[in-house]
Image 1 (tube, rainbow, N blue to C red):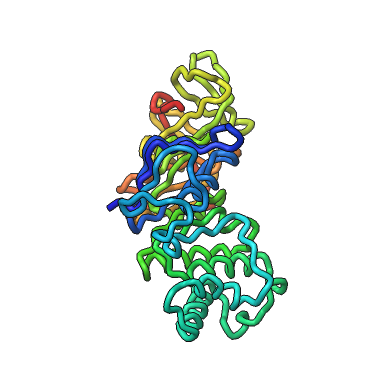
Image 2 (cartoon, rainbow, N blue to C red):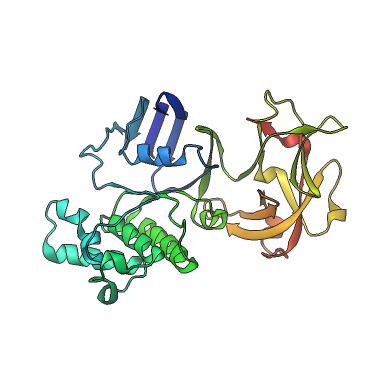
Length: 342
């Protein structure tokens, strides 16, 4: 069942297109991570999905019906936590209760219950924090208060733009737990952007890749951005670090801006580089993270090579009794002919 349906979406700022989506759907109860470099359109997409901005062209349907900006049909159902979620100049309690007071039949007792439940979800003890003023909070605490204000609405959709940016590890963990609790308790659909690949891998069932305002695909994959060079074998190359070079077969239209994409199930992980078969290439990196995908039952691995993050699915034969562990040195193997170009 589709919760969102986007079709022929174009959005621009001062005449410059920043987001172009031909077609995209989001399922009910999904947890979607949106990834891409700065300026790729991630925040713009969340603004459109939150109905706080209207696309220049195209149609967004919510639960099968066309929804407009700030429409009553989505008010209180879709909650957006922006990257800069400023608090009101009032107590923690009153910040969280603010949105509830606009809901019908929200009596004082019900508001209090909702506020305290939301505070506990984000790890803020009501008795210790309810009366605390906005200026007496750390950055991570303020971020959790902003999230609690959205959770108090018990939304059908929670949109989070860089929710863990500039917060401590404890707050990042609490934010993740609260969002997943909302999904479990109320069936809330979650859509989040984050530069923290490990955090996003822990929370998301699926990934959407944006680049220059366009969807480059979905799923667990690796993107390598240009510019590209040519080696003596006719392959295109991109240096990831001093001794590690990514090689790709193909003929992209622009060597400077082309993006190479390779699906996670087209790559393999090895602890011994001598086992990598020809014609595969091997890249040495550090295994940062292992993630179990509940939706597929697969285990994904994230390997850091220079500034690039390479995403690999472990074969099921390895996943059940894997000898891989975060912090290990590992080799990612791939065939240069498995590349798709954007």
